[in-house]
Amino acid sequence: MEYQDIRFEVRDGVAIITLNRPDHLNAFSGAMGKGLGEAYQICDDNDAIRVVVLTGAGRAFCAGADMSVGAATFGKQDEATFSAAAVHPPAWEVRKPVIAAINGHAIGIGLTLALQCDIRIIAREGKYGIVQVRRGIMPDAYSHWTLPRIVGLARAAEILLSGRMLDGDEAFAMGLASRVLPAQEVLAAALALAQDMAVNTAPLSVAVSKRLLWESFALSPQEVGRKETALHHHLMGKSDAVEGVMAYLEHRPPRWKLSVKNDWPEWPS
Image (cartoon, rainbow, N blue to C red; front, side):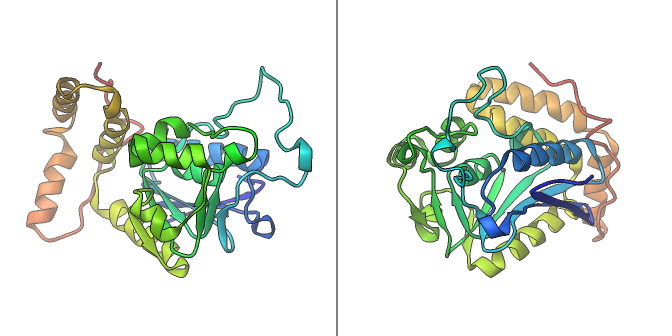
């Protein structure tokens, strides 16, 4: 498919989605949001895609809203069609791991979109902030839900309510990412992790674990236990549960057979 403001490619089971407005520091546009949502849906539907890496072209990940229209940047929108979600589906609904390779500045919606991903690797040189309260609006893209789960309520309150900027080391220290690296190493590290996961992790096992992980904050320990048990019953005794053990014992790469699309369980209540 042809996209405006993003690039989409697949290499050896890894989808690479690149926010692609480098002359504007990948400032977010409506076309970017539409294309990103369409790419996410393809990644969810296509069993050949095992892992997704989201990154930015040039020296930024995404510098936030495109403010080239000045005072009209956050003008009144059609209440019937506007959504602060910005992208549909969000990354956490994709049944494949989504790794944000944050190669540079991630500001405003640039950072709130990255919070939807499962794993974040950030550039030490980048600047990070959810600055919307300093622009007369408020944080978006489900960040009031994602951020407290990632960094805790107190740190989320500081980030969201102050709108202040963080450098890479402080963002890492606050828990916004699992790794902080020099900018030129971020994408390579994300791709190496993605490739390892694409080969060595069972796709259906990862998919059900990801979904349960994201919904676990709304569940009691007992509810999590019931769902883990039901999902174990769906996986145990099937081909991948045999293959994973035998590949390990025989010191060879696994050959997974179960399909996220075709073998998805009836989700336990």
